[in-house]
Amino acid sequence: MPRSATSMTLTLALLFLVGVSTSQAIGPQDPETTTEGPAAAVVKQQVVVLDTSLGTLVIELAEEGAPQTVANFKRLVAEGFYDGLPFYRVVAGHVVQAGDGGENDQPTVPGEFGVLPHVNGVVGLARGEAEDSGSTEFYICVAPRPHLDGRYATFGRVVEGLDVLAAIAAVEVEEQWLNDGQVAFHKPLTPVLIESARLEGRSDAAPVDSE
Image (cartoon, rainbow, N blue to C red; front, side):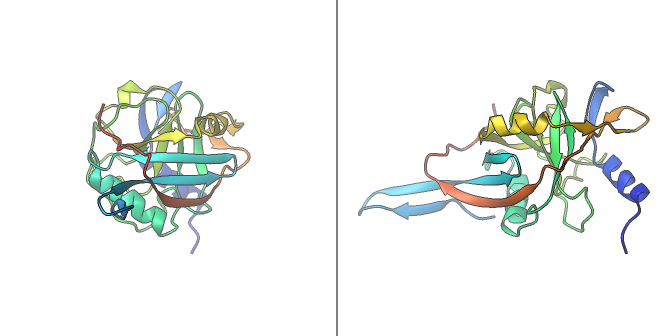
């Protein structure tokens, strides 16, 4: 039975990324190995490729720093979970956020915090108030957000398509505010969709480590 708009709003409210003001509010497979010649082994680091309605984003993953978060994200990508889902939250100068709004029965993962600083292009896992409540909803920073460091699981970064990320962040939105006006949850007027998400092995991709 479809959920009401009120129910959906309450669900989204539990997934917000906490901000510090109303003007700045936020919210597996193993690497492939190929052999070329008797002694040459090339390890291919997996990346996630998001083909969106505004262009393509390529995300390198912090396999060592956030192994459970990365494994969960890769599983969802491999299962086609994100195909056709929107970037439903766009806050210029802050983050863009994607998923299905948490309307699912996917498992949660333990909080793996402090892996990467919140700078432009860094990918993190949205969660509710509980530290271990992250699951499917992810966000990408479009500006440095240092006040979020150590509070959310950052598990990757955009290495190709930063111009596409900027275009997503610049779309026209309908302003929406949650938590008594403390959390910006602006909705794009024209949907920005993840048309497909896939894993690719790339020998030129360096592992993403903590910084």
